[in-house]
Length: 171
Image 1 (spheres, rainbow, N blue to C red):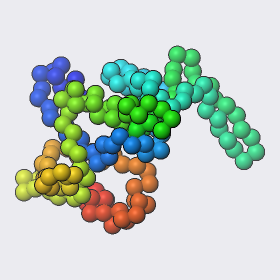
Image 2 (image 1 turned 90 degrees about the vertical axis):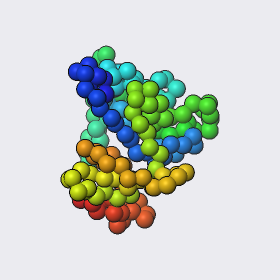
Image 3 (image 1 turned 180 degrees about the vertical axis):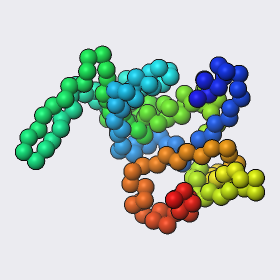
Image 4 (image 1 turned 135 degrees about the vertical axis):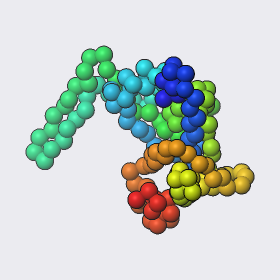
């Protein structure tokens, strides 16, 4: 988005609020589809080999009575990546895919705010305002033009988040 804005001479500020910037292994892997891999590569965000957990040649469809493989098309890539720090049997100096993306996005000019988005309100001029609980400083109120919420599929089942004010505001 920033690259496209720059090409058209537009000034755009993007901030990402990320709570989990860590060096430890969170035992989490993510699957990158061939289409996503192609798009990441086109944006200069191709996952480096050290964060790739596994490359796959097939996807298995499992049914009640029959299983069958679907081949990954030639010239395309399907892989899983380590999300957090790498497992203990890997080089501890290398961080996972999330840290790789954050580093690349910082290089492109994205502001990374380390903290937890805890609330969403609308300002008097009808703009979203996100309250951010920071790790090492005062809480922030970040006023925006657009808010995108990206969270895990099991976020609503996370202990303590059943009645999150942020999730309630988004709902």
